Amino acid sequence: MRPAAAAATATAAALRRRAASSSLSPPLAALLPYRRASLILPPLRRICSPAPPHASAAPDSHPPPRLPSPIMDAQFELFRAQLDESSTLRDRIRAVVAEIESASRVATAALLLVHQPVPLADVLVKAKAQVEVIKGLYAQLAEVLKECPGQYYRYHGDWRAETQMVVSMLAFMHWLETGGLLMHAEAQEKLGLPSGEFGLDVEDYLTGLCFMSNEFPRFVVNRVTAGDYDCPKRVLGFLADLHASFRMLNLRNDFLCKKFDGMKYDLRRVEEVYYDVKIRGLVPAELKQETQS
Image (cartoon, rainbow, N blue to C red; front, side, top):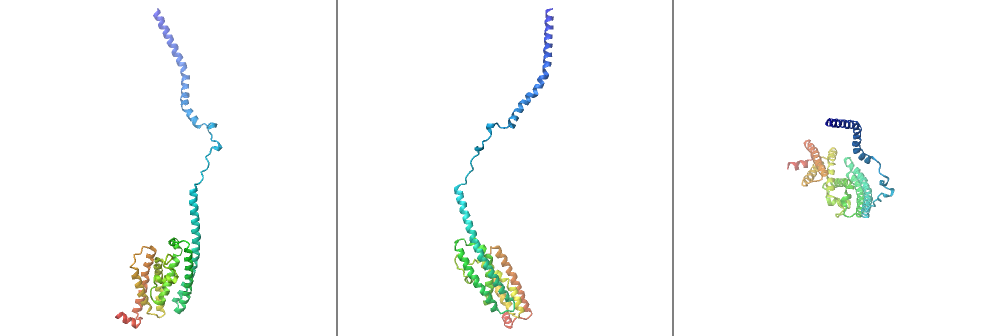
């Protein structure tokens, strides 16, 4: 009987332990999510929580502002002075150039009378008066540029276009007087420019000659209308020689190349006038003999 009693006692104890474990399982299951949350939430709370009072920066803890370098200040102060000086000098140059442009327009307007039945001497007198004015203005420009030696091409663009138009006018006047080409040295002399640093730029001179050729087609037509049938041949010979001389140059300036290309169209229009006069039998007798010979 004792073994049976012991087995019954063991069975009863096992039942009591099972009942106890089943009664305790809900609270333990309820505690498990809390424990899992406790493993995650504390870091989030640490991240999102405001910093403690001792971690906040004090108002006086900002670093002092960085002062500019004295060397940098000195360099840019020098740049400022140079730019101000250059701007002042450029304004003075442009003031003189504006007067050159005004005098050039007056001289060009006087030369336009050559297309009208006006004596050539009267036309040239008015134009030459303005040439003397322009010569004095170039002397003023040379005095201004003496203040910046070695910087001719830095400011050259301020008077390039005006100089080209002046050369065109002078070359046309020279042809009207002599029937020949105004040389570079002669153009410099007429403008009072020395052959030193401030002289007549070669490309400006060549561009001025190209501008001059634009006047000949109209001039030839008007002279033929006035009864001067010898004019087309003289102009044609001059333009043909000038065009052939330009073809010797290896031009790299795009603007000058375009103007030189326009010269061949001027030459073609003069040729058309000359051929028209010749076909109509309007060429003088001496010119016919020269052509036949």
